[in-house]
Length: 252
Image 1 (cartoon, one colour):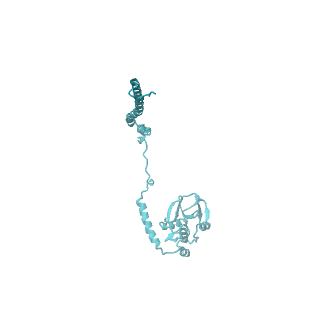
Image 2: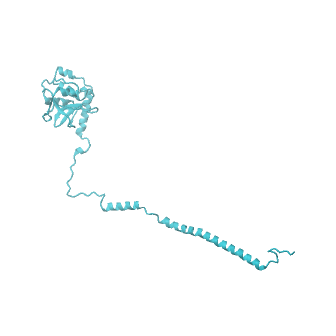
Image 3: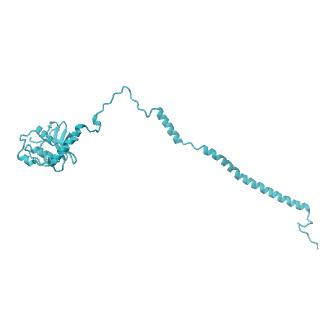
């Protein structure tokens, strides 16, 4: 029986050994080529991206809102949008003092006088309405005299329910003034309205009574009223501020 020697024995044909070595070298070469291609596929795009980054950094997207705002501002400037132009022929506007809130010397003096009156009236100890009715200082009724007597109490502070110079409410003021002419009036707006005769507004004279909803006063002519207005106010003369009122005359 003959033995077959192994392929790597010393008796192996040298050509076969060389052939296997070339085959292994060829496989190694192919693997190296594939690996090189893979590395190149990864690295090269990365290098391009890295090179491109500065370009993006130095060329950001334009802010169109800012550009539009800047353009609009320039348009306003060119059109004199912030410039006031006055025609040389334009008339000068007359300034009315009533458009200002500054207090005049006369108003300051009147305010000081009201303060003095308020102090003196607070300590009032004179006749009451009932005292006047018993002995009226003006026995002859006269509308103009009613308006004049009422003005003696300008500056008297408003006091709810008040009916003498220490403090008046609206109907208490009228009651006190009319009592000095011997005329007794109730201490209420509705009662005083019912005590007189309603007349046409155009026939009203100073001294008549102005009747409103929940309020009254003495008519002073030219659409004005003398009244004790409200808490914090004083007896004063002022324009009638509403159209829904009527006039009552006492003694007719």
